Length: 431
Image (cartoon, rainbow, N blue to C red):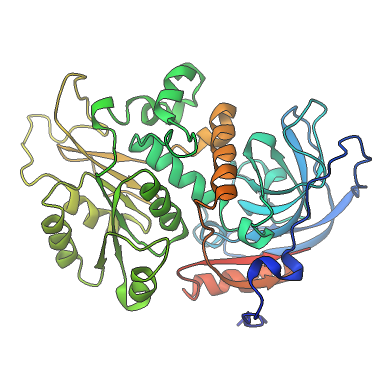
């Protein structure tokens, strides 16, 4: 067991707590930047299945690109990948490794060129590029692309900001690219498929190009009134997917362990779905989905893994799947532009069913690289998130608990391993 102190609810609201008070951005852009030390404390992984090690005297990373800024890390949002990567030895490009994909803090260094950011500004930094260690969260100072940084409005605390980043990016790309949702009617949000056509396939990373260009045909794009089935509705990614889908006018069906999360979701001001289904009996859940949507649910997001994605496939697949001479078609299958056939689209955030997609179904993985490798897309997403937060149209996931200091990270991840953190986010306050 880790040495952690249960988080006690205070009588005053989140936004008024002293540790969460937001300061306005520095108005004098010519002021001297704060002094940044040469060395810092980081949290290193030295090998698979090993605990992270708090290490002092590590060099502070330096921005070396016209888009890079330096951020003093204040609050880290923990993600399942932070413990799954060392436990199962994946997603670790080098050792020792610095982990952490999202954090909030203060801008302490700007690029030489004019920037949309200001020194001292409170921001969320979203690091989807796990190969670049200087952008990782488990350190005192981290680099971020200015088009991957979200300016926090005064009403959103640093703690709340640390819960939002990766889940928001995954949700927008799943809905906007893999499902083709057009968000332009929601505070001038992105129409990602149209933007990708303008950018051109030659400027997209090769390994995600097919998903971005051929993932969904124009006539199949999700629109207001369509059903979205989310299997694994307690995940943070599900939280943001549900909120964004509702903003776009989709009807949302959530499959979740009702014994754990049923009452919370059914009464939730923001997340209450159009239909809540218990995951305890998958076969029964599939029957309920098909019956209540009259077999017309074409879009599904699975947040849990291969087994539940296989259940979701059966919920979405057409009743009759014609056989072909050469077996199942590849995913995504070729569909003529003029065809009126509407396929089902299954997005696996953590895994897809084994084998090829059957006829009438297309499998999708989220093209997360778009966020950090295509500046136009990254900037469109973070500026839209700024507007959503400013106008109160998007709510940060609940904070289950707050740990303190780098030395608490291993114990916090142990709690996640044991399944103690569910229905919200665990954050670590390091400053």
